[in-house]
Amino acid sequence: MRIASTMSDSIVDGPGLRFTVFTQGCPHNCPGCHNPETHDPAGGREATVEELAEKMGKNPLTDGLTLSGGDPFLQAEECAQLAALAHGQGKNVWTYTGYTWETLTAAGRPDWDALLAQTDVLVDGPFVAAQKSYDALFRGSTNQRLIDVTASRRAGRVVLWTRPDPLAHFTIPES
Image (tube, rainbow, N blue to C red; front, side, top):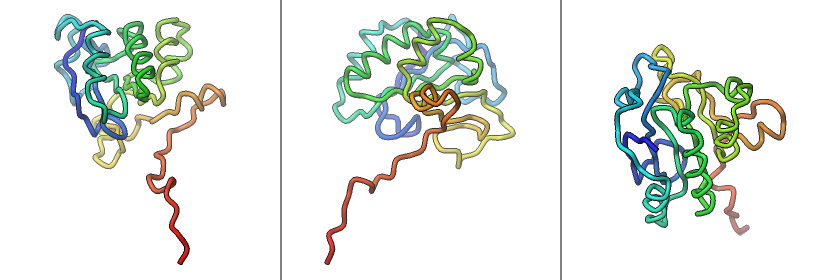
């Protein structure tokens, strides 16, 4: 697959410590894009899915894989393979795309369906500079949605991801 780069310890591309793959190639060309160097599909370098999975597995503290870009749906088959390997390592998978959930699910493309099937949270929609916000959790602009893919498929409609309460597993002993 063609990638721009990887980051082994991202804390901004989803919850926890993430292995992020910035795929190469993007048709959206959003004005103000954070990663314009990823737009040219001929840029970047080649990497195998196996090479990326091995690199992802080196840090036992890594919580998940983030597929960013560029747009991972331009290389959906390879990204789905990598996501499946991430799940095999016990990691969750977040995928960023300039396409909307509605476009992806209506397209009838088996490769896009395969990547969606391996995605836990989809961050969808183009970056809109006028809606840029540093308060938008794990997003560049407020129009983008954090979609819980499994819940959305089950419900037959978009279900937004909600951040788990980090204290939910703790009980306070009674005095």
